[in-house]
Image (cartoon, helix red, strand yellow):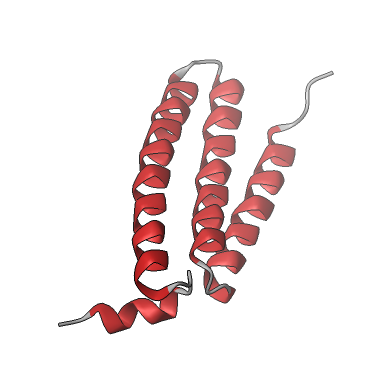
Length: 101
């Protein structure tokens, strides 16, 4: 018994909305980064679901590329968060506006 593609789309929409809510409401840079990862994983769920629905591997290949981009994004994001913490001793993203010349 196969799971219909609509269930995957509802799951993906829910994960994306949770990530969007996290981005819009949080000030902590780590939670901000985790919310972006949730949104990328929601896109991956869509890629894999439609790949399975259409019977080809294109969506799964795009999902692998998205995971590689997400890993690079996390590496850069953690570096930015460490610099933010080193300069301000806090990971609040609203304090980064004082880094202007």
